Structure formats: structure tokens, C-alpha cells
Length: 340
Image (tube, rainbow, N blue to C red):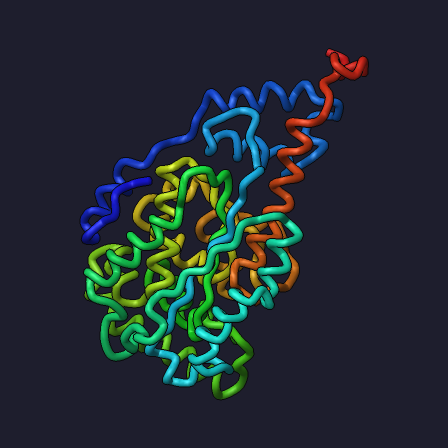
């Protein structure tokens, strides 16, 4: 595990020295895929997933015996502006629900056999209202990134990354608009279910926050500090540490994607070890995935967060690994291969 960082310049330095793909493992996966008892390409994206896992785990065959789902929970000062259908107290209440085993992600982790870890990010002290001030100081942002990095422990062979936090789709919309342009209408959706005048108010909040901070932001990490939140910084840290530790990452919905987009904006190769588990019903998420070139594995109309879509996608990764490692080759099965 990498050493914890103390300031954003250290993060910028890490981005410049990310490990690349393991081409030897990728080649071994490609060779085996051609020998399996099926027409070439017949398993579609399952074949791509097996090769991707091998490439970023740095070994062949890939394994998925120890997947982990991580959920970072944070509160946002901007929630006081009525941008969510739920009060900010729900963040801490849902954390207790996770601990008690009563949330959707608990059930999905049980079915997928994934280890669930939930991290509270100073819930009693929300970040500053991004319309009025930067969300975090540089020290707070760097500390949250470091905290996320420490969640990536040895022995994990895939990581599903998600979050919980009232007002997080407001934060995600502001980050994406600041990083990639466009307007608040394009990036801002209903989140927990705001409609009508409340949705218009949410869009106005996003536009005002971006107008305040984008001119002062020198790079993506400064935008994260100004427009993000503690759980967004922690997700970015976990994604970065996973790259350094050769752990493939499955991204959850709009908020997890926005946190990852900070790394993408710093270096488009920084997310090569990531896939999008699903595309959220939140309209900005599909736009974001198109922008960062991550076609989603699942499109089920989900918009729950809490790493639910990413955890569900771990099941597809398990299927890909099982087919790649367990299928017989043409020679082993005595099946005639394709004619030359």
C-alpha cells in the first residue's frame, strides 16, 4: 500500500508515475481465449472482462475470489439549500443501516460474496457550502484522499467503489460541469427525486457553485477541493491506490464516476484499470460515461448509490473469470476447432 499523502502536490506526483498494463498477462489471456471451446468473440464482453482483469491484476489466469465493496459516506454543506428530497441526517442513518445489514448493498454483497466495508467521513462536520466557499481546505482534501488510499488493502482482487451522502448528485453535477463544460441543465438531475421548482433550484445551485470556483481552479484536484466532498476525495484516493496496487476497480454511479473523472481529467490513462459497473438513471451519468469512454456493463435504471450497481457488476466479473479459467480448450475437449 502506498504511503499516505499530505498535500495535493503529492497526488499530482503520483498521477505522473502510474503503473501501466501488464502486457504479458494480457497476451496470455488472449492466447487462452483463442483456444476455448467456442467461436471467437462468442462471449462478447465477458471475454474482454477476463482479459482486462488479467491485464490489471498483472497475472494470468485472473482471479475473483476476494472482491471488496467499499462505501464512503460524507455530508455536504450545500444540502442546506434544499437540493435533496431527504434531510442530511439520512447519511448517518443509512450508515447505521449498512452496519445492521439492512441496505440493498448488504444483500448484494451477500449474493455476490463480496466483503463490504463502510467508511464514515466526519459526518458531524459537513463540508462548506460550495456556493459560498471551497468545500475543503487543501489539508482536508489531501487527508480524505489518503484515507481512501488506505482502504485498498493487500489481498483484494477487485474493488467496487461507491458512496452515501445526501446532496452528492449536486456535488457530482458541479464537478462534472467544471471539469468538462456544458451547462447545469445537462449535468443536473433529480437525484433522490426532486422535481419541478426544486429541480430548478438545484440546477441554479450547481451553476452558481461552478461559476464561483471554476475560474480559480488551476487543475482537477483544485476543483475536487473546491467543489467535491470528503467521500469524493476518498473515492479518488481509493481508485488511485488500487491502480498502484494492481487492483481492478468497478465504479458505481454518478458520484463515483465524478470522483474518478477528477483522475481522468488529470491523465486520461488514469482510469484504464476501471470499468463502469452500471449506468445510473441520473441523466448526467450517461453523459459522463460517454465523456470518459466507459461503456457501462449494466443498464437497469438504478439510482440508489451505495455501490449497489458496482457490486452487482462484480457478478459479471466472476462469470467472466469462471468461463476463462474453467472452460475446456478444443484440444482438451476433443472438439474440432475452426477451420483455417
